[in-house]
Length: 180
Image (tube, rainbow, N blue to C red; front, side):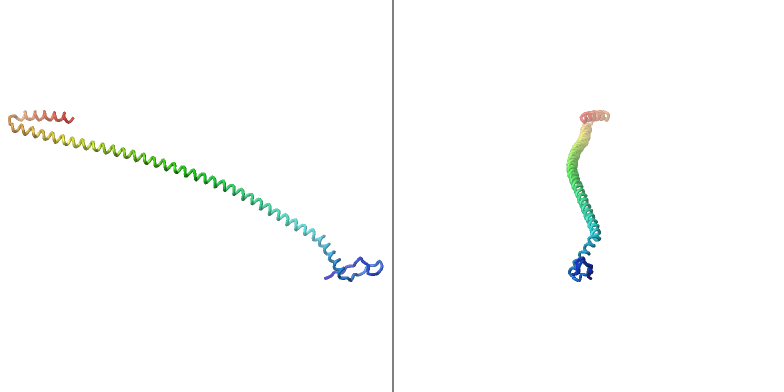
C-alpha cells in the first residue's frame, strides 16, 4: 500500500503546495519516511537487542573460557594424581620385591636350620642306637662270660657254692668296671 504524502515541491503553481501524483517520487519519499521512523523507533530496540545479544555472547565466551580454565586445572590435577599413583605403584612394587627377597632368605635360613637340627637329631639317634647296641652286646658278653665261668666251675667240681658265688661276683665287678 502506498502512502501518499504531501510534497514540498510545487506542481506547476507558484508557491503552493499540492499533491504529487508521481508514484516513484512518492515511494521514495514514503520509503525514506518509513526508514527514518524505523531507525528512530526500531533503532533503539535493535540496539538494545544487539546489546543484549552482545552481552549474552560475551557471557557465553567468559563461561567457555572459565570452563576451559577449570578443565585445564582438572587435567593438571589428574596428571599430578596419575604421577603420584605411578610413583606409589612403583614404590609398592619395590617394597614387594624387597619383602619377597626377605621372605625367601628367611625361608632358606629356616630350612638350613631345620636341616642342621635334623642332622643333629640323626646323629643323636645313631649314638643312642650305638649305645643301646653296646649295652645289649655288653649284657650278652657278660651273660656269656658268666655262663662259661659257671660251666668251667661245674666241670671242675672242686668248688662249693660259696666259692662259686664269690668268683661270679668278682667277675661281675670286673665287667662292670669294664662297662664304665
